[in-house]
Length: 498
Image 1 (cartoon, rainbow, N blue to C red):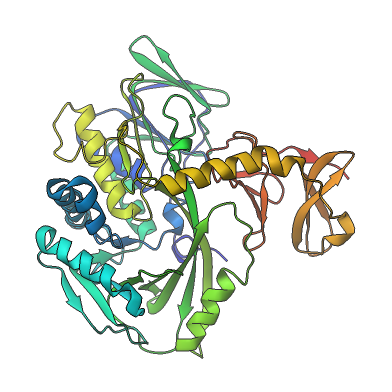
Image 2: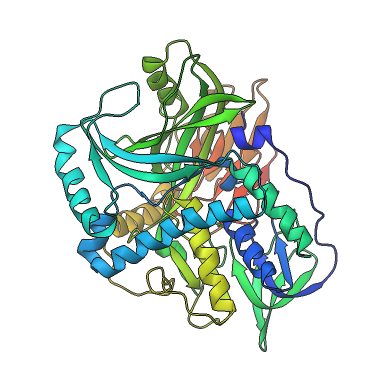
């Protein structure tokens, strides 16, 4: 099944890049961040080229839950303790400003995208978590005085305590993108799909972006590819990891709640409503895990369905999709210069599951940088920061996992044989000392690939929920035929004929 957003809506298609081009700015990646950046820059008269290796908004943007909120879990107590009150206030003001700015864009451009104001709630059903709620509300008393404690909700079960942010919002992200794309065309932005940038090289005061057969020359480059595809300099693969989570769209056959909700204890569950062909349905998401871990259908979509049936026994599951998020080690997005040694290349990444507001914050900061204007939130999200790493445990986990996937797992002998792998399942076998990734389709046809990530060479894991090969190091993803579908890898897997 596709996501609700992509099943219901089609964005205009654009051609591949077929000749060398030149512009003021080349934006690589046409998700909500890249498109928002192109919108602001083209509104200010810049000559912009926007390229996308797939279809516009077909990856993370088309698989979001699309909550527009400055309530990012329990973030504000952490920010206040780590960085101080001024920093925490700026983080809140930047994201709350994005809520307001997105509404302004929608109204100013008459974009029909099911935008509606909703209150947002973070809550707990576990008494042991009450201290965390109390710490957060005490921090918010100094940051967002409008936030308030609540002890009940409209959810189909009781909560113990929660925190309410008023006047947040939700929308259909693809309909929003459709409206922005119309403005890009009016502003003469050149858009190219199915166009992959493999490398960027400096040419005096300009840059050349290299695609498979052509080049784009520009003074400025914005890397808006969700996960930066250039490893050095920048080293973003060492500063964040990717998290996968799952969503089901459900016709509950009953009246639904108002508001957007997310709990604080693991496993995480996210609730919102959406419009599907004129009818209100439930979007239930969550169950996040580090991308690349072995996962089954029952541990993902199956568990969401089981949970939903506890509250809505007569439900009909209409949509299922998974999404991925870049998680920074200090919980703050990277927005700004890609590297101190490459002037005029910019990046926005590590949106930590809150991409609707973070993408708008990023687009505005980078637009101001290109226009040589001061942005009051620049230092909060500075992408070249070298602050001490707060999350030392996760740094250790990343090092251990990378070592395991690059070295240990490659040396381990595989016990499976082709006969052990059943139809519609996948796994790794060993033949003549070489590891081979096997998937058998419903008819038993074998699809064999080299299960080594084309990014940095980690051993891939089979994802039984989505039938993909996932990288446990940096979260590249490949379909069962070996086609690369998520970066930072750009190349497909080598295939075998067995």
